[in-house]
Length: 57
Image (cartoon, rainbow, N blue to C red; front, side):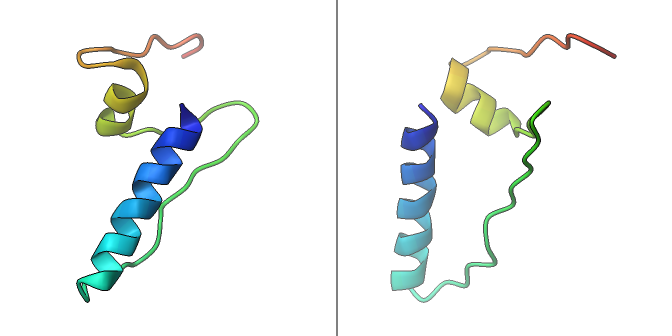
């Protein structure tokens, strides 16, 4: 699933570049303990209406 999301993001970047739109980069947060996801990415990964449940607060 991650590979699919990465492919979609890269396709969007290439599409913008071809249209002459600026591409500032891809914001990425990486950790071996957590991940930063937008609501849009959560929906893409887990389906519409899905909400994450924190393990620790």
